Image (cartoon, rainbow, N blue to C red; front, side, top):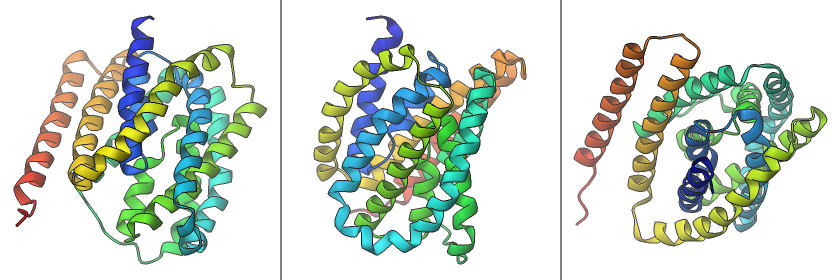
Length: 280
């Protein structure tokens, strides 16, 4: 195995473990690291097919909660279809380095918002559903990432645990299916993408059950915050790399950006553990 394949196996195992514990996180952890070795055009088709299986499993085990959330997420699905069409077309045209830049640029603030534990319920949930779905569809089809913004919205709106997982499952199965079809129409599947899948599947088979087991013994919010802190560091590093590749910033500037991300992460983790209620 080459170094990039070893890294892919390890990071997808970590990501699958997180997904098994939280119900999301596979792409948001895999993509920032894997993009250091692969382009989105090569990586995305493989991840979409793998995520279709993962998301279908999550939806199946939470299927009893679908009636509770269906009418809340249905408008998001309408916007999702439009967004996937837009994002897939962008992916087929834009230079891979710019796709990486957009991925990191939009992902970093979403991760930091989650790490900060910010929750502010949106009153006009129906009004923002279709535009939100369009944004999610565009983001997912370009990056295969949608977990952080979806989790941010559903946490803000006070979804119960099982409803939260069911809502994630419905939307993520839909986006996987629609994106997979769009990629096929645009001819984005390649032999290189298919060659990646065998290195991902064993990690998923082992990681998801492990995450489901581990979360029984850990506080879910603590586990989520640590994962988001790790993800923030990876995205900050990836952003600094691609800024240099695109000649958008000097090496010194990218070190400054990465240092700021590290400091913010450290502060958010410190604040979380400081303010966490002490169990009796």
